Amino acid sequence: MKPGSCYELLTMNHQPLSKTLIVIAGPTASGKTAVGIELAKHYRTVVVSADSRQFYQEMSIGTAKPSPEELAQAKHYFIDSLSITETYTAGDYEKDALSLLDELFKIHNVVILVGGSGLFIKAVCEGFDVFPEIRPGVREKLIEEFEANGLGYLQEKLRSADPAYYSQVDLNNSQRVIRALEVFESSGAPYSSFRTSGSMERPFRVVKIGLSVERAALYDHINRRVDDMIKRGLVDEARALLPYRHLNALNTVGYTELFNYFNGNTDLDTAIAAIKQNTRRFAKRQMTWFNKDKEITWLAADKGCVADKIAALADNLV
Image (cartoon, rainbow, N blue to C red):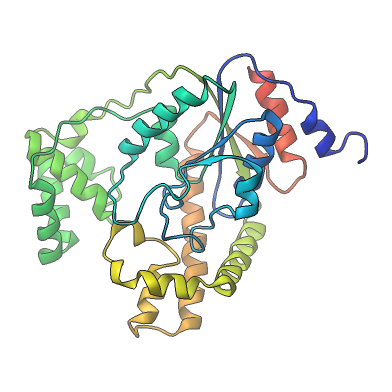
C-alpha cells in the first residue's frame, strides 16, 4: 500500500469528541453507499439508511440496496425493515431514527446517515412541524374522492381550503395534496398554518456532505445501473409485485414502467428506456432539493479519496 493512499489515510482514525451525525446525500447513482461504508469503517461505526425505498423487503434490485457483501462490511439500519404493505411516513421515520440514534450514540461518537431521500434526511436533522391528529375515516374518504374524481378535483379543494399551500406544493404529488386536505378537514385550519419552518434542536452535531457528479457522467452511471438491474432480474422482481402495484411504496421509478409493460401498454425496450429517463429526472429533482440546503458541503464524487476528504472535513468541524 503506497504511503498517503486513501486506505492509509482512512486508517488514521481521529474520532470527533462530540456526538456527530455525518450525512452523505446526493442524487441516485452518485456513489453514496460506497462512501458511507468507507466512513463507517474509518470511524468504526454504523450506517443508518435514509433511502425511503430501501426500507422495503420486497424491493431490492430496483432500489439499488447495498449488496450482501457491502452489508457485511458495515452494520446498516433501516434496510429491509418494512413490508410494502405497511404505511410508513417521514414522520414515523423521524421518531424511529431519533430513538435509534439515541441508542447508537451511547456506543459511537459518530454515526453515518446515507441516502437520497431529502425529506427523510430533513426529518432526522431538522424535524417536522407538529400537526393535529387526523380524524378516523378522513383519509379514506379523500382517497375515494381521488379514485372517483381524479387529482384535479382534490387540487380544486386544496385551492379553496389553503391557497397559500396550494401555491407552494407539487400539485402533481397526490400524497401531499391528500395530506394537506386531511389536516384541513380534521382541524378546520389550513395545512399551511401549522408550518413554522423552524428547525428542532438535536442532541448531536450534524455534518452534511453532498456528493456531486458531472451531469454527463451521472447520466451514464444511471444508464449502466439500469442495464445491470435488468440483467440481475428486475423484470421478475417487478412481475412478482404486480398484484401490489396500488400500494404507495410501488409508486417508484423502475417498477411503474415495468407495470405498464406487463399490462401491454408498451414493449420491454421502451419500458427500460423510460426507467432510464425517469431515473435521470428523479436525480435532477434530488439535486434541486439538496441545492436548497445551504448547510451541505459539496464534494466531487469522482475525484478520488472522497471518504478521506469527508473524514478530514468532519474532524475539522467537530
